[in-house]
Length: 121
Image 1 (cartoon, rainbow, N blue to C red):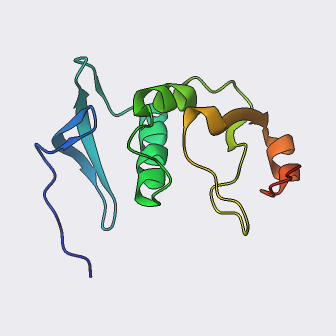
Image 2: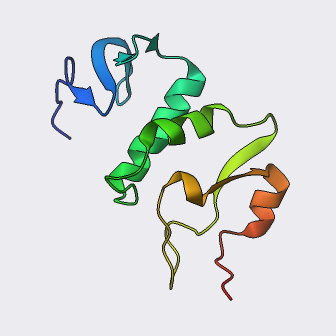
Image 3: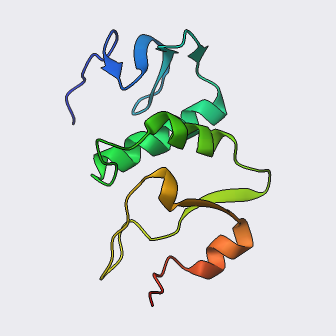
């Protein structure tokens, strides 16, 4: 069983963890405050932040990446679309980065038909 770590008061990029708002057996949710003053734990915000943190853990988010711009890209996703990486993050011969320049909006059907394959020239 993983060791529980207290992250209240810790800072992750522009977000500071304020308090735990909901807890399941293996899942934790926290209320965070941005440096701009906004407090949020909405589903769109959680989804965007979760994705950014996931990519950071996968070492595909470089230190120079604009995390706030990436978060806004996810939050401003058009209805019926998904955020897709132009160059996949884990290809066999090519591996892209989780940066704004590598993101695009695709419909769900387009993204599924892409099948996460890199087609180079």
